[in-house]
Amino acid sequence: QVELVESGGGSVQAGGSLRLSCRASGYTFSIYSMGWFRQAPGKEREEVARIDTDAGTTIYGDSVKGRFTISQDNAKTTVYLQMNSLKPEDSGMYYCSARDGANYDYWGRGTQVTVSS
Image (cartoon, rainbow, N blue to C red):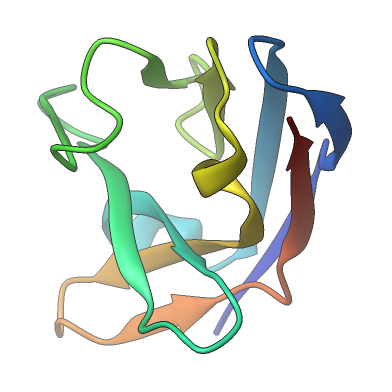
């Protein structure tokens, strides 16, 4: 079992920055990929960024490329999402996700990001 806890959400004006953190605990040795998703009211959940925890390779959603950066700590149990040049459309609940070797996805409870214009 893996537990994910997000932190770092909040309210910011457009153009500002926030840094989200997600700490994994439990059977973290089984994880090979971690990522961030977001969901705004009335919209589907979309993938924002993902990192291969072994290779360190990253992928980003088109809407955040060049503005967001995903990274991990040396222990590979905490991932960060640095969000710059935030826009009102970036607002939503941000969820951390981790995938294990059986391709099972774990989810955190989410952290709210609100960007005002």
